[in-house]
Image (cartoon, rainbow, N blue to C red):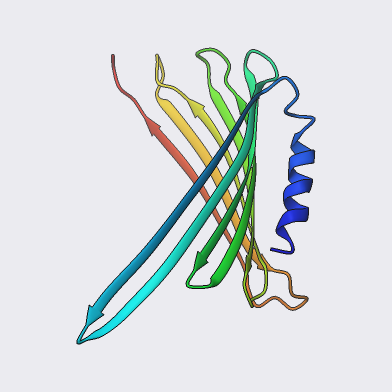
Length: 172
């Protein structure tokens, strides 16, 4: 939790200038679950308290370019073990009328499990889409995901990249 409050404040104030004159949204989700089971006369119970908070915005920069973003905070307490995560996200969309669509998004998750090293997961997605009209449809997407810890010599360090090209045609 020690990393989350400064990161949440930074992300909120970083998004604030972008959110001027934008649609703002907020959401809070809370759930509590207690499960009790017995087997052979032995009773086992578990408790989970989930908290999720989201603050977001959406804004058209021009008639064909929009920008949206949000900051999500998740706190999960399962049987006294807390796990905190923060998910800032920013998406830029370019949608010219009836020609093609482009999108770009970046998300970064900071997870700070109790008693373990903090972990950062980042995802970057880009896409180009040509809808089917007189020509075949075309979809190109690229995704890059990485997971790293904060240690000088990483225990966790992975990178995954995928690229897709899809085409199709249908006569209307």
